[in-house]
Image (tube, rainbow, N blue to C red; front, top):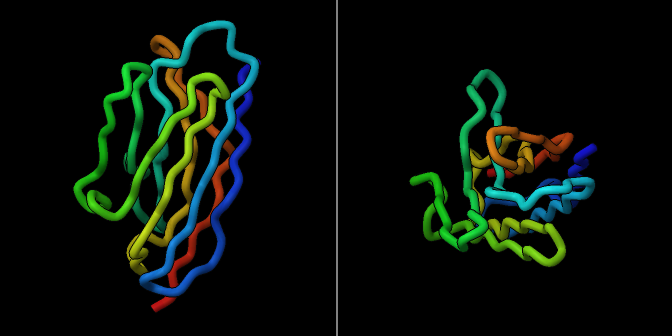
Length: 115
C-alpha cells in the first residue's frame, strides 16, 4: 500500500519562506510524477508544481520564479521550497504521486501566510 508522509508547512509572514517535504513508500513500481497540489478555502484544488521521473519540472504560473520543486528518486522524496510567500499562497498543500494511471495523496499540510 502506497503511503505519503508530508512534513513542513506552518505560519509565515508575507515575503518569508517555507519548505515542504514528502516521502513515498510502499510502491512496487517506479513513480512517474511527484508533486504538490494546493486547495484554498472555497476554491478548487490546483496543481502547484510537479517533477517527472525524467526530471522535467512544471509550475503553476502563480508560483513560477518563487517556488522550486526538487525530487530525489533514490529516496522517493519530493521537496517544495517556497520563497517570497504571499497571502494568496495560503492553502492546504497536498503531496501526490502518479504511478501509471493511479494517483496517491498525502494527508495535506496547512500553509498560512499572514500579511
